[in-house]
Image (cartoon, helix red, strand yellow):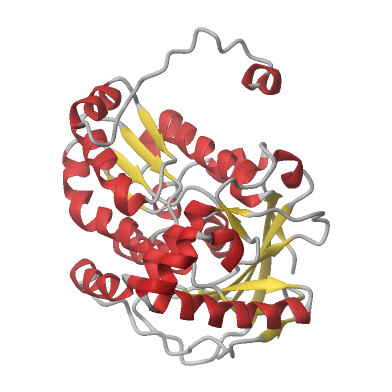
Length: 371
């Protein structure tokens, strides 16, 4: 199948067997690699040992995690060790959260002045056809993230010891359901990892590059009001199911039943994915000039709005594969452009000075200015 799809003779490509419960096998794998792409979740169970082995074995590391607690824990625990060993560890290099993170960076780069706030709406593209179920592991990660939310708050108190400058102008307040004229979508709160990743990028840009941090909010979008209202009820039901051990176990044991077929253990068929396309619309509000000092605050409200869109094929499989492989290739080819000698970074912080965006565009991902 792989040979048919790629046109390459893969018969002689070696296979390295690495067991997450065998530290020696992980280290052996890392010592043979320049970059390891880790695609095995939930990362809170399986990810940290891989990161540790990669740092010890001098292999750079890329993952596709959408789990904020894992991502931020790795930054807290391993960034100094990775820097000392010359290893770059870059998390969330899949659909979570390359479009939102690099999309925000792209928006800031094309903006005439400083960006005050960004509103990102994640949706299917207008030309998207069909539907597909979501793999069970995504559900498992979401459930685990929700029940360990208090642990994440404690973690952030340790990780973020220096406050960011307090912006004078807050983003427009939004309700639980609203219509975005820029995205042309009905919008709901998005509790996935995008916001946490972009916030970390903005902080790293401020600390390392003295760039003004933008405020960020992320939403799910749909063109159907009925679907949006249904999403609210599903969210309430999901919260209830995760609130008690008994109902939580039922949800994880019978995902197809309790998510109405949205999440399945089998995942989608390839044919289900062929017509799917994503669109992330990012609306930036700011000023038509830049202040030299990122700590200095504006005395007048934002006077400029710009809208950019990031688009690509089905988000969970084709696009995620593109994001992860191009991120790894960027480390291979442009490691000298990555920050410092090493460390743990978000995509936008790691790839700020590289050609990743243009390479993504050559491989089916578009970054365009809508307004």
